[in-house]
Length: 296
Image (tube, rainbow, N blue to C red; front, top):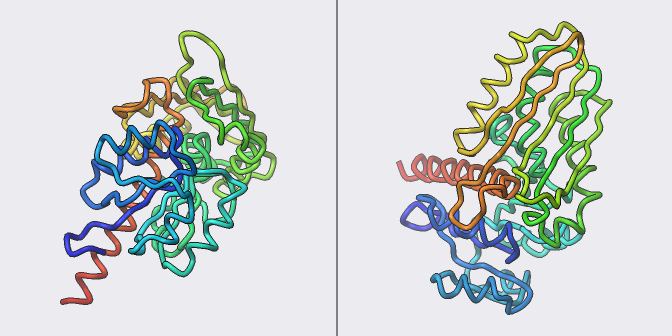
């Protein structure tokens, strides 16, 4: 940690997610962006350099060869590369925040288990759909016996980059794994829809739950509390539908982007990046508190 109390941070990946992450980091009071590394001299990197961001074109090797070790590395590349990246960065001691659906590190959803952040060096931000639905489903499953869950994620095609398209199978599996892990429900199905509609579809996640003793009052209260918690770090999160009929609950949420680089419909990018920033800032707060105790 620097003397200023800010953690040194690098972003690996210069796609839609990586560049929005870099922008969000530059607004943080406790994270200091020291490098954005891509694999090519892409237009996004050149634009980042013109905005004053430090950039490199050597991918993971740029981080390995850097003159300094980073406190936090955000991996915004491809799920198939994350394990290799984590291995190459292990000696640096950096906490790695994985924005790919690799299922390698500890799954973190800040609205549910932010207390686990400081205990792991490789944390997974699950998926954008997972960040949107897990707090809601976790809250309902803690209060009710749930038999099965189905989740349908819809994102605009313009907000889904090449790496995300390559990782669609991993996206589905990781989302299902996260729902099972955080709710204890085994019968889980996740589906994803990339919509070419014009105007572009707002990012939304629809959740269907079948269980015992579900009531409108109980489910709405649980959903409201979970949504309020998510909005502390994702301003554009909203609940559009919450109904209960017999033994079935239906909850639909939408996320609009409030980022300066992202169009309003790209809530899928905004929610996972905002969750990742929240996780890193929680880690920074823990490091700062520890540093204070050690010097007291």
